[in-house]
Length: 168
Image 1 (cartoon, rainbow, N blue to C red):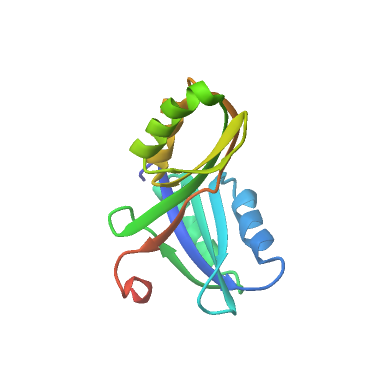
Image 2 (image 1 turned 90 degrees about the horizontal axis):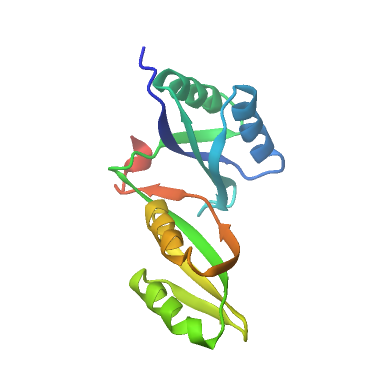
């Protein structure tokens, strides 16, 4: 058995109704899995929602939790979002305390990472950045020398690249 710990990203199509998220997330908790990232969103079908879960475990454990999740009656389909065949994105909102003298240096970093300054006040600014988690981590490293007031990250969401990925 492979005991190597690895990260998995799965996309779960579920009934769009109350308590579905609780049922799915509590299954992970009962089985001893820590959820690293969790996002939930509407789909093009109003009867369904999409839950994207990022978690870590052994190959055997990952297979087991995916199989058990698929057995829940509220789960319609479950997909593994392989890094090579999928696109992952995350959103970062970052509030930085900065006066006039610091703003140009911050603006340069934001432009390099293709972010946007979405709010500006006398003493702070709010930056929006989307991309892969590694990009957001690198941006946060660059911004660490500034006075960061608040950080808000959405967690990963993802989608398969192929037009027919959901039929596989």
